[in-house]
Length: 80
Image (cartoon, rainbow, N blue to C red; front, side):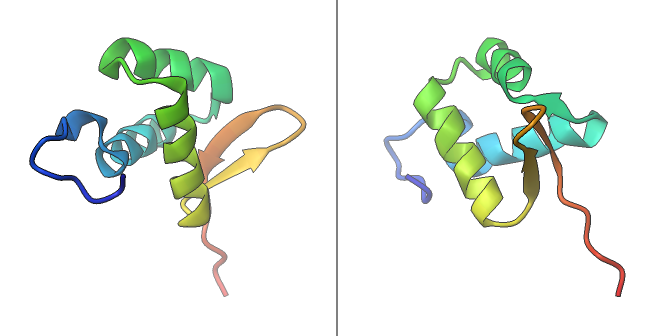
């Protein structure tokens, strides 16, 4: 769920996990699997939550995904 409630662990909320993913992607682009492994050890999240967060970030147009190399990276704004 996007909006947290009082019974939810905030560290596993999509908004917080999205911020964690963006922090990792600011350092460097990641392979989709290695990013999950990194977050799994730091946050102990499930694969479903990870993919839900990636979907949220992609729909928010904050990240891009390369289908050929399976890399995730921050979206660059076009300077027009």
